[in-house]
Length: 149
Image (cartoon, rainbow, N blue to C red; front, side, top):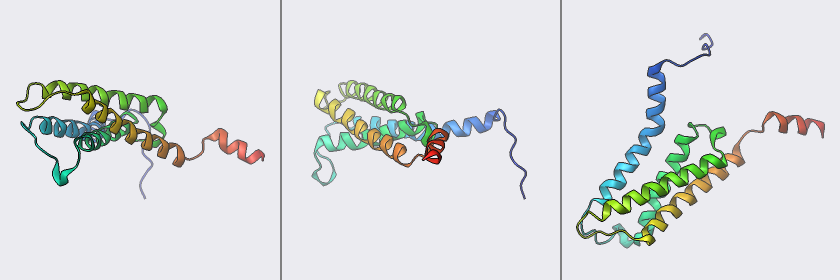
């Protein structure tokens, strides 16, 4: 049988691994978006999907990953403030992505694309926030209130 783990500060290596596990996927998704935005003269998306769907889907994933990272990978960490930050950061990255496209031959920055980016992130974050609230175990005050009934 294993001895219980001592509470206290985590070793630096453990904190680094935790940070990489939370923020690594965010960085990878941002790199994917940057790479896709760097393709000159992008004609059409696979399967004939509309441009707004492509923007919305890659930013939905970014929003969900940001929500997870900002919440520390814990369901209890998903709060309304964290959700707003996740959408805001995803939308801000969308602004930088649109600006980046102005330097790529055959690409341009549009408000419509930025709207699709922000909407995709907002939808995914809203779903993540609602799921975390719906599946969160009751807090101590809620348990005590139920016992009184």
